[in-house]
Every structure is written in C-alpha cells, then in structure tokens.
Length: 557
Ligand code: C2E
Ligand code: MG
Ligand code: MG
Image 1 (cartoon, protein in one colour):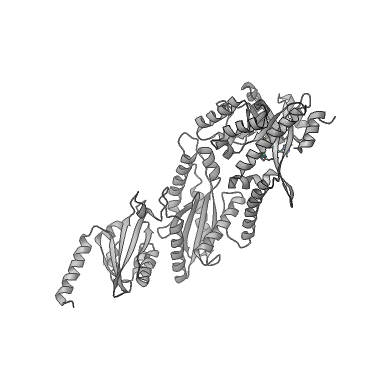
Image 2 (cartoon, rainbow, N blue to C red):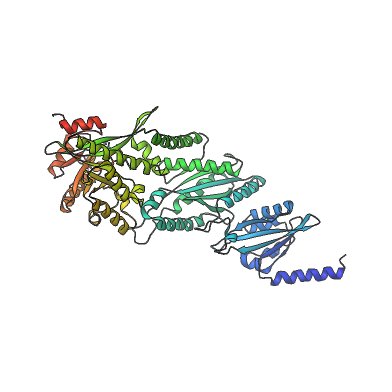
C-alpha cells in the first residue's frame, strides 16, 4: 500500500517528467478530466493547455478546435483500448497523430495518456490512414472523422456538412498531360483546399481526384458559403512546367446531417450522388443532395452497364458521312461515326453515350472496334470495285495515349488488308498538350505506317495555327461552330477565311464541318475550301446507303 511519502514523491516525479519530457503528452483521469499536460504539448500545439488541468477533456478539444480529441479520449476510456486519430495543428503543414493509451488497473481504465507525434514520412505504420501523394487523411480515416463529427454534432444539436469535391475532367487531364502532371495538379489542389477548412474540420482525399470535407455547421446557410469557397479556391489557373496555364475547375456534391442521412456511409454516398449531378449539370458547380437524385445516378450506371452489354452483343454500328468536293460534287472521302442500336431504345447517337464511355474507359474498346470495322468495310468496298476513298476515324485521347496504339493500328490494317493511305485518324486539339515530344513521336510513327492525321473540331481548342505546324498532321477540320456563323457574323467569317488561307499556306488539306446551307457552301468554295462535310450534302448514312452513294454519286440537283 502506498504511503504519503510515496505519493508526494510520485506527484513531484510526475511534475518533473511533464516539464522535461520531449514529447507532447497529456494525461487524464478515469473521468476524462485533464490531470497533467507536458510542456512540449503546449509548445507543439501553440496553446496553453496546462491551464486546462482540472477541466474535462472536452474543453481541450474545443480550444484546440478539434472536438474529436475528446471523442478519442472518451472512447479509449470506455472501451479500454488504444485510440488514434490525426490532428492538424496550426502552423504545421503535415498532420500529427494523437495516440490515446488507456491506463488499465484491475481490468478498468483508470485514466489515459495521450501522446502527440508528427507522422514520419516514409514510415508506413505512421502514415497509415494518410494518402501518400497529398499527406491528407485517406478514406478510411475520413469515415472515422465523419463518425466523430456526427457524434459531436448530435450532442451539440448542430448540423454537419459533408462535401465531396471532384476535379473536373481529371481523367482527361491525366490522359492528355500525363500522370506526373496529374499528380502535381492533385498536390496543388490540396494546397488550394487546405485554407478552406478550419482546424476543427477535416479535409481528406478519398482516392483519384476526389477530395472530401466534413465539418460542423450551425445553420444551413453556412453550407452554401463553404461550398462557394471551395469552388472559388480552384478558379485561378494552375501553372505546370513547360505548359501554358491550365484552368482547372471542380464540382462539389454535398450532403447534410441529419437531413440526408445518419451514418457516415449514407452521407458520403449521397454526397457522391450529388457530385455526379454537379458534373452532369455542366461542372464547376455545387449540387446539394436530394432524394430524387438516386434515380438519376442509377440511370448513369444503367448506361454504363448497357454499354458493356452492347459491346458483347454487338449493338454498335458505323455510319458513314461523305466529304464532298464542292467543285465537282464528288465523294472525296468519308468519316466513320459510331451509332448504338439499343434493342429497346432504338438508334442512339454518340453524344449520348460517348461521354459515359470516356468516363468509364469503355471508349477504348468502342474506338478500336470502330477502327477495325471501318477498315474492313472500306477494304470490302474497294474489293467490290467501288471508287476508293479515304475513311476518317475518330480517336479518343485514351486510345491515342495507349502505348500499344500504333501497333494496334498496324495490326488492324494487316488483318483487314486495307492500304494505309485509305485511312485517316482524327484527333482533337486538346490531345496536343502535355509531353509534346512524345506526342509528335507517336504521330510520326503513325505517319510512317502511311496513315493520314487530321485535327478535328479545329478552332474550339487553344492551339494556334503556328503551333500546329510543329505536328505532322495532314488535314484540318474547321469546327462546325464557325461554319454555322459565317453568314451572320462577319468576325466569324473573318476567322474562317484566315484558317482556310493559313492552312493552305501550311499545305494542309482543309475540310469544313457542318455546312447546312447553300450560302455556307458558296462561301467556302469562294474562299478556297474545297472539301465539305455537312448536312447540305448528306447526313451520316448506313453502310449500304453510303455504298450506293459511292457507286452512283450524289443525287442530281
Ligand atoms: P465529330 O467527329 O466532329 O463528327 C461530326 C459530327 O457532326 C457528327 O455527329 C455529324 O453527324 C455532325 N454533323 C455533320 N454535318 C453536320 C451538319 O451539317 N449539321 C449538324 N448539326 N451536324 C453535322 P455525330 O455522329 O453525332 O458524332 C458526334 C461526335 O461523337 C463526333 O464529332 C465525335 O467527336 C464523336 N464520335 C463519333 N463517333 C466516334 C467514334 O467512333 N469514336 C470516338 N472517339 N468519337 C466518336
Ligand atoms: Mg470527327
Ligand atoms: Mg468534328
């Protein structure tokens, strides 16, 4: 049994220990009341916690702006087990970790010791719960934090806001600019988002381009301000090495406790659904969850799974739209355009499913199929004695980036027997950004095979004509937005004229997309653009109808 002397000695020993120990530590009794705080704790955290000796641990959580600290202590005490959680300290970029160790006597927790440690980079154990790339808490830890926040909100009769922020078109950015640039953007985004949270809130990275926030709020109105803040934080352009500034936007989905759910899982799921809607709604916006959304989210998943099914059941087909030489009305080429014949919904145009296919990665399979089908079809027409024409096939960024792309084109040509000069690949301006040397090398490999390359939708991206001259392309397709406006807008007409003139100077073939009126065709002819692909002459046609047009020419005027 302890004597009085023992007690006094222990107490002063304890005091000395707390004054000299090099680690930030505090100790509580079985009731969660703080009994000791080490000097280093105050140094590390920057607030005078020693003044809280004798007060419940909740006071410490409140003052530190980290209410979950109290939850960790309470849980360690009641469960009699170790509890850990990350703590973001003002003035420290990297997170710290608080480990709460209960003191067990006779099977009961009689108090606990809480130790704060910076997590050591490289030590896997310490970093558990954190994302390697950004140093933010990961999904697992985030769920814990949501749990703690909900608990605190419930006790304080407050609300909690869960926000998910996704970087718009991140997959495209990653595909086009490369993974290193993608990672840099994620780190930059992290630094932009950090100031959006108070120390009591949590910012986490759930994976990919998805960031998550959880915070207590007093009123619904606060949530609007907070979501605005997040959207605004990313608006300034990002600078990447060797690259023009890249403008990145994000979309935000939000759910609110208790209205939109009572468990972390439910709230995160509903915020995800809302995020998806924000992206569908045009991106760069925030969407709050509403229950009817679940139905639309399900719809998107439906589309994705029916695309998978369509690939298996061969529901895709290719239509062909002629390119006409305006001087003699001859079919000078054609573009292959994919269609989907859904057994229930009928013919679906690419605008409806290409975006979903791109998001899910299914575009690669669809694109390769279109390429093979078009080459095989073009070969058959030539074998049947029809006038040979070049077939243009759209290539998506993902296909082009795939390191096997060039060899797959070579294989397809060999398999189908089509001579390479009868194939043209259409790529878009946005694919010409990133590692320019690698892109040029890939294009040169394709040119060496003997296929042509064109830039689709020219004028909608950022590239200038002089920039284009560094790429080995053969053809330019002026976007239909310019053609539609040539009569009504003199400025547009001026741009169209300039594009035509300069591409002739660069020795590029030029095709005008989307001419619908005779006046537009006349304008193009007048200014030296000989090739037109547009409804004025013909829509995209099923294979048999296009074959008939190849054989018989355009119907007489
Ligand atoms: P795009 O490559 O720019 O193809 C031209 C689009 O403009 C086609 O739409 C065509 O039908 C339409 N068009 C042509 N002339 C006119 C006109 O005079 N007026 C109007 N209003 N439209 C005209 P479509 O077939 O719906 O394809 C849309 C887009 O889907 C294509 O734009 C292309 O980006 C994409 N796409 C189509 N097939 C494929 C494919 O096999 N792979 C990939 N990656 N994308 C594809
Ligand atoms: Mg095209
Ligand atoms: Mg186009």
